[in-house]
Image 1 (cartoon, rainbow, N blue to C red):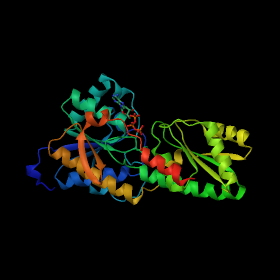
Image 2 (image 1 turned 180 degrees about the horizontal axis):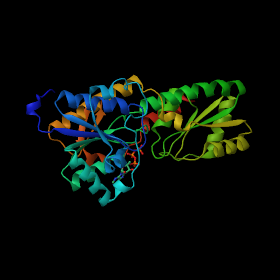
Image 3 (image 1 turned 60 degrees about the vertical axis):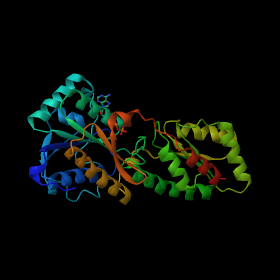
Length: 329
Ligand code: ATP
């Protein structure tokens, strides 16, 4: 939607990235800045998340501030975690800075913690907020996907393919530990896309004896390797590997992918999602919306109330888990 400048009530908005970084955050920043400017709005970039906001780290952005960033991982605005912002005093300081710069609306790109911060800011002060889901974990219920998840998944698959090669050659068991403290989506999706024999995620209890039985039965049927994807929230790959090796007698190797999963050029899918969400976030502010979060459901861009979004517990994709079991046999 395009509105002429004189029709726009909101004159200045701010944008920040907060929490863990995710590939595609830059594409979201670009969409916010360009959609804002197109609608005659001044856009202030805030660096280092809520910390930067409290410390007054702001600068005016123009169309060229976001040139050549759509393909870059990380976030040009930097990101941070801020304990001070968790306190009412910290948020008061943040509000003072927003007032000084005439910022009426704030776009927060981050995860559920960052959304909670935005919600509090709006509840305590006259500041409109919109959240854009930027986290590789895909741990938010109200949206089918978060920005960064698809890229992280592809990074995992690239590594898994390589580990498979060496695992097959040596006829080993391989355990690949991926990110996901409370949400097993990266592990589950990677298990299906990577053709893993088993997946261990926080949402489902696993039994070590059953796992070893499956490994041994697979070997008897002629499987040349055994690939297990483990979500970090469940346990340590190294420890599990030792247990499996001692129980099955099969050589086992553990790989922890770690921060490699956060980096890299965003996938086309993440860039498109980020562009659509960034554009919608600005529309929400222009239309007077506040305490909203944007997301994607059944390929439609949506915006819903932030409190409702935060109250929804992430549902575990049981069907996908069952499929992974059937296809790994
Ligand atoms: P990720 O999913 O990558 O962890 P996140 O946004 O959930 O991202 P958090 O570290 O939980 O990451 O939150 C980011 C920041 O949001 C915190 O450092 C803090 O400044 C702010 N924040 C989080 N929770 C609250 C809260 N309850 N009240 C006020 N601010 C909060």
